Length: 424
Image (cartoon, rainbow, N blue to C red; front, top):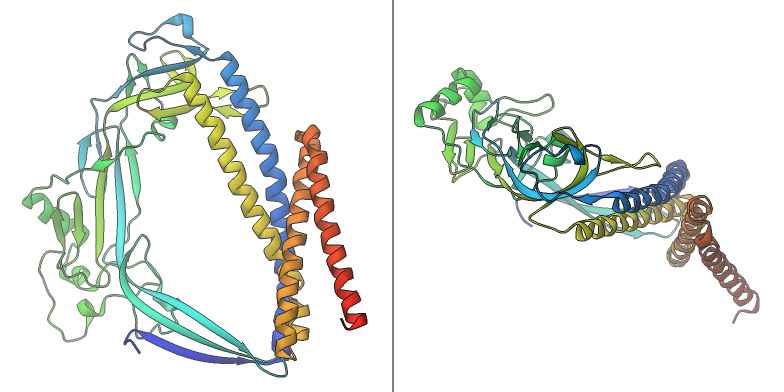
């Protein structure tokens, strides 16, 4: 067995399982309600967004050039392409890294112990269960500090952080598209970030070390948020403290730790990227010397920025596809939530039958199928009800699908009942 693994065996009797399953019914109701609300809201969102895109496409006009401010386009929804440029320097206020760019991005990673678990459950005669859970621990870089107090073995695997900070992005104060100012809501859609060297001299690195770790005790014990333990390698009683620099630089990365090639728990990597000046295409409403989102008659706002030179029709088609993709993603999430909620609602049936393990497995498989069919039919019903309001012409077809699913469930149950009665 690997050194960084731990196995735990737990037992639960039939009474505790049935109690847990009944308690889970409340959470199942919550999931079903959440799925219902999500599915209904999503259909309305999809229709409103689609209508806003369609209205925008009907009124949008092409602006030949953004080189000069043309009062004739003021108040109009326009499509225009050009180079997004800036003369400003944008900087990270904590680490002092700066660049002439549209935006500066800070990404943060922490070297932490990470716990993973895998469980195998076996049913026993009488309705009890035996669960064997194997916990494995590995050191890896993660995006957020991991609270080791939640581990199964918190005393053996302790996490710390030398410095806890957040990822961030800062934008240039003035970015122009020809003679027009690009507002931040459009800048947020710019992509194509590339690594940005920190540009810190040795003197600046030393100054940053003293800023972040102003005395040896801080450098030794690490800066931790509540709930995170200090690094034992630095805080061990009676151990001579390592006073080597805690701030190191390699390319676009600031390393807060003793050795970049041999990371210790608690070390932090802060990497920097910039979104450079680039060609963009936008669809937005002209207001004076800048832009704002187009507001459709239904109150939904629409605007778009794409990297490179892209035609107006292509941009609208991409917006429609993005709306369709998001609609289906949310539909799938809603359906899965509905199925999960219904599984929890009928879970007590499986527990009741598990007094005989084989019967419990049969009921479990059947209840899973029932929950899936009911969840899918319930989702179709909710979507159809939403369509009665938002898409009345399409609602009847979906209602028919829901009826077919319920009928299938009914006839399957009737067929099973006949088999039980006849013994065939």
